[in-house]
Length: 339
Image (cartoon, rainbow, N blue to C red; front, side, top):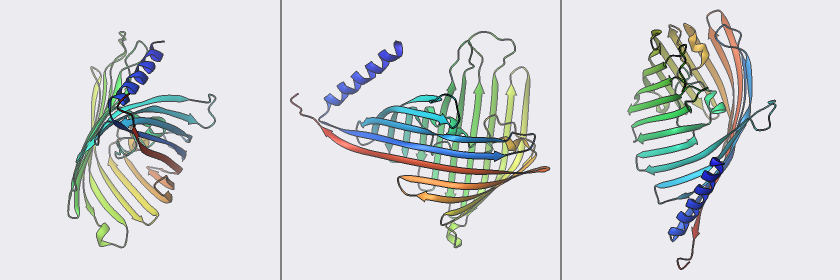
């Protein structure tokens, strides 16, 4: 009952707002984000699994002015073969500000393009099962420098649930061929609303710092970037233990036309990241992805990839197919000011 009242209140406020101006610009977007991800892993760090499904989303809203807007809608997640027809329905509702070098979002909005961290910090399944970021996102971007920070609230505290959120940040600095970048993530688990002596506050932190060179303009390739650096992680359960790890991380990205190759090599102690790709728990992990871009239009983006995953004593394989379709538009709506 309370939820329906809030929905009606939101609709009434929207109608009243629209009637206040001489004209409003209607914004809308709908689309589909589908995935097929087969992971043939036979090692002690993770299990073989196949993820297939998608997210269907739709949203509508209004531009308040040239730089500010708000939108609302819903995202429906389904997983192929699941018993229920609609596995998960999440509301979309957010305020968006974008002016010059600043972009700010507040509410429940798309994660796409806003939490692109190295896989050692954030698993690539996150967009499958949690396509919306619920919290804050702030981005500052100039030609040779960018910095973002975000907060994603993943669980509300209750008698049965622990409060949880993820904080992330990324920064990049370019100078001619050289680049310097860092990424940070913290996953925080608080206690439940009722006292449980077996539960303790859990903090998991990861930071990468990498120095690289962009050789794209010096070769026949469309893109060639090589980076190397270090990763530091900390895993702490308060009053129980505090574990610190450090290792080296190197990456190479090469792309020509529709074909690209990505390679990542980690050496060091196994990383205890709670939301990172699980094979980085090994002391050595080399990942190579061969990717083919199937679609690259404004409306449809899609690619397929084949991955090789090398850990001590194991060579595993993965295959992925991702398809993203988005239709959007804006329409100026004028009204009679005498009403």
